Image 1 (spheres, one colour):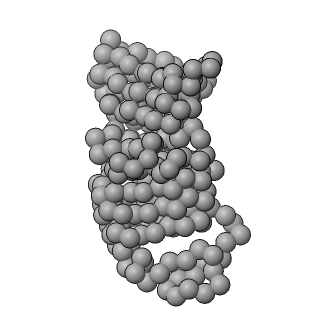
Image 2: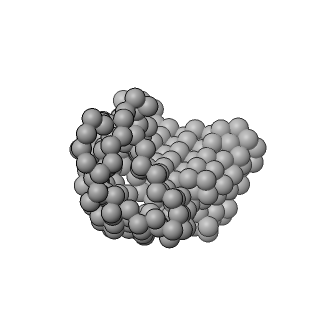
Length: 219
């Protein structure tokens, strides 16, 4: 049946002990409703998985939801009035985070992406990440999306259709090799505050956008 938790205290569900392959599974035949506190789900490093498999309307929360795991399986909606963050356990994701792109251990596939329902934002990747991120062809036009890595290259390898929603790509290197289409806002943001920016032709800047890449951003 349905599971309801009220209150503003955070809830953390994580694996412990030496077995790094232990999974965290949030499962119910009905919906799971949270209060305003942050829900954190963390599995062990290695082959540990966070699995979301509920009935009803999935997980709904007024607070933030954070999944930290080297692999994840999202089989039902994760809806929050705040931010939904999904990130690998290790900052050095090996070798690549694949978003609708079967590259790397940590992937988000075509069937999972529609279940990302953070009203404020949906974040994929770590703020301190060093692994690259590759994005395939996708449509994500109901909620804002942020893809982030500290030093790993973010590559847009397939067309991104965002409707009227905003897209933010945060890394010290972003390659828009395919079209980004939205009537919302596209933000390319370096991770470091000490970078300088060049547009159009290479110069002294350490964060650079070529005209070819800029032409792919259709906002």
